[in-house]
Amino acid sequence: MLTILSSRSLGPAREAAPSVLYEAGLYTPDAFHPRGAVLVQDGVIVDVFPEAPADAEQLGVRIALDGILFPGLIDAHNHASFGAIPSWTPARYYTSRFDWRGKSRAGVWVVPEPDPDYARLVSAPFKKIPTVMQPQAFLYGQVRGVVGGTTTMLLDAEVGIPDLPGLPGFVRDPKDWGSRVFGVLDILAVDAVSVNEIVKELNADRAKLMVHLGEGTDGFARGEFRSLVDRQLLTKNTSLIHGMGLLRPDWLKVQQSSASVVWSPVSNLRLYGRTLDIAAVVGLGIPVALAPDWAVSGSSTLLDELRFVRRNYPILGAERLVAMCTEVPAALLGLHHLGRIEKGRAADLLLLGGHRDVTSRFQAADALCHAHVEEVTLVIIAGVSVCGTAELMAKTPAGGLASEIVSVPSTSADYGRTLRIAESAAFGPAATALQGVLGALAPLWEPPVL
Ligand SMILES: [Zn+2]
View 1 (cartoon, rainbow, N blue to C red):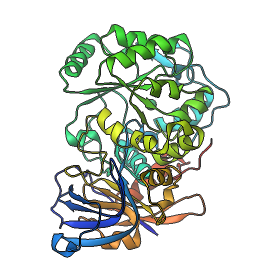
View 2 (view 1 turned 90 degrees about the horizontal axis):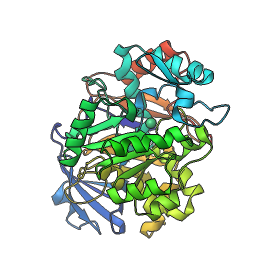
View 3 (view 1 turned 30 degrees about the vertical axis):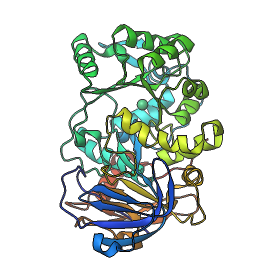
């Protein structure tokens, strides 16, 4: 039985909690400590001990954990409000995003209309969710992330998404931290005024740009990159989401500009039958973050995406892959206080249960890269336990939040989790309402298709 705890928005300002010393295996930036300890105070890591100190009781509440603590996973790109839509497997491969999604500008279809299967199985159900239920839809997508150990998620893709006050979410959105992130779904659709503002903010190091681009194999996909360059938007603060359509000269420009990439191989392979030449991209020293894109055609969780990549791209190495889900996306999003178990960083942690035989950093990383959602036995955001076994939730800081129980499918059998919601039992009613609108509601975890 696992337990999940949530608040409306777990930003840095929450009620004070007692200092807690977690004793566990520790995955730190440069070492693995099999019997380490991390001291957490007011949501922040205030000390890291290679060996649990003998006078632990003087430091705070001492909690021994069976497993390895990692930084919480950071999902730099998701369309969380689609999380309630069941996974969709296309009947054929497409040539670019707009080949299946369709695209109209100013009422004119500039690329083919949506694929009929996509329209029927994804787009039409999604449109049934009324605006007033968007917070519930986003919540559902966030819960899907947290069961896999995600503690930060960029919730949506576009400039000008409606602010979502009252979003009862509990995976941090970077907005909680004041980091300005521009999201762009279609570079050609951004007006000149917005482009000028984004360029100004990027060049002043005041913002990050996450831009869908080059999602496909045709000239249209590559042309988006040229449009980005023409608009002076290729900067060190820019992250290209996908980039499959880029050719070698384009990648050299990305390298020169010190821009980054968000890689979603499962979704790429399911939609287009191919993905980036990741070895070449990494070989150029371009920072790469891993993200599922969305559960509709990508992995159910970032943890599942990580496992897929570990199995299929051994050249990347386990420790690099863990960084691609933690410190790299933290840097891409400008969240320099997240992504590492290090003094002064936020206490966003995931516990991988068991693995008492692990002795090296590589082994620890490799264990996470092979993990399934049910092995994530505790998730902590800003020092508050948000997800874990009933036993662990009972002995870790709960922030005074209420709880509710949900069922999560897993690789072996369904198992229960308890959600704790700050102001009301929000998740159950949200799921019931979404089920009522959609008919078919995606389960909280779906098995991999690839
Ligand atoms: Zn996307």
